[in-house]
Image 1 (cartoon, rainbow, N blue to C red):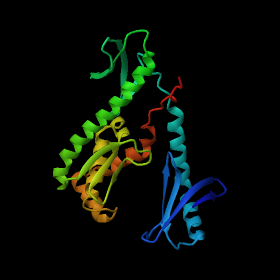
Image 2 (cartoon, helix red, strand yellow; image 1 turned 180 degrees about the vertical axis):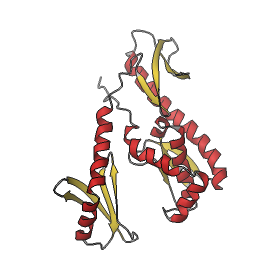
Image 3 (cartoon, rainbow, N blue to C red; image 1 turned 60 degrees about the vertical axis):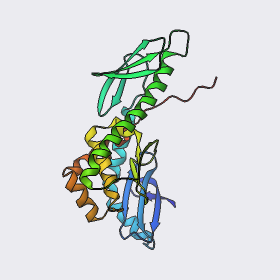
Length: 248
């Protein structure tokens, strides 16, 4: 249900989701979906409004943070010397002509792309497609490794681990024991990626966010709150602004 928060200092549309199983009310700010409010099925609208008014200062700060992160993001030029994010750091893109072409490698602080010879597809278009594919391969490789490492600590084995282009979630766990992860986690620091991996592995034992679930997460990552805080504050920055596909 789409509605609005309307106060003296805020006028924000939000999505209201009611659930028979929910016992509490919560609000989250999603960079893609905006403000989401979850509440019990029969909670009166007046109580929802009062809750949001109490949270108005927090809502303003979160919206401002997302706006500032978006404003600071600049499209990548995809030309030689461009800055590329990878595992929480900035790397320099280097493009070299190569008859074989089609490869990406990491050397120190450099992401090197071997493109085809002159006269073929423009180097910036080639480097973009090659690096984006490389990001996904790296996400698959690193996430598989971290799942294998942490599943021993949690004491579970997922039925499947898959990396996808998820727009709205960093990770998901299904009732059948499959784990799905957002490839953009490869842009985050490793300790943040590890938090998402452990979070989803713990869902194989506790498919909820109960105190028992968080206790399990804490037993593996005692500092999970700091890692979660980084993701909540900086998650909106884990995005690559791609150019629209060209029509030839």
